Image 1 (cartoon, rainbow, N blue to C red):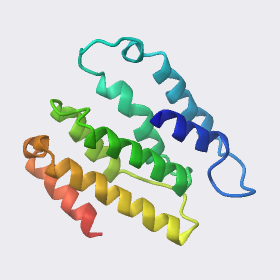
Image 2 (cartoon, one colour):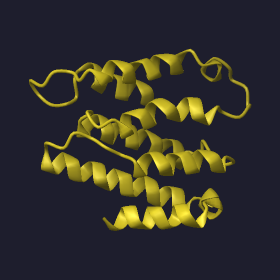
Image 3 (cartoon, rainbow, N blue to C red):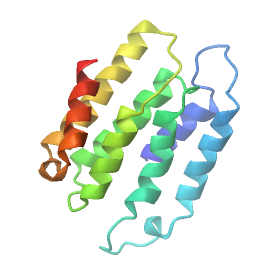
Length: 152
């Protein structure tokens, strides 16, 4: 599902037409390959999801400076879907990790319109984190950082 969308963009060199795949993108792909081998995907049990294993490859893409806006936007959209489906509804640490990752978002800025869409996705994810039930558990310093990030 969500991982496959990001992987497809990484594999096609989502940095734009005629632009080669960046060196770091193979490292980013490895994170998604590792995710496929996680036991959480093979069981249908109601055990808690390993949020760090699930979020790690998406957050790496979001924080990688040499990824293009399309792949960054898609990774942010995946995290937004995880949140909106309540995947981390009992896990305040997951929400804190997501906030930290989104606030550290970097991407290769070349397309003005695409860049704006990434910023809007960042805002969407941060607002979802703050307004979800676990947002009440975010420490005040992190809320202040979120507000500063949204203001820039």
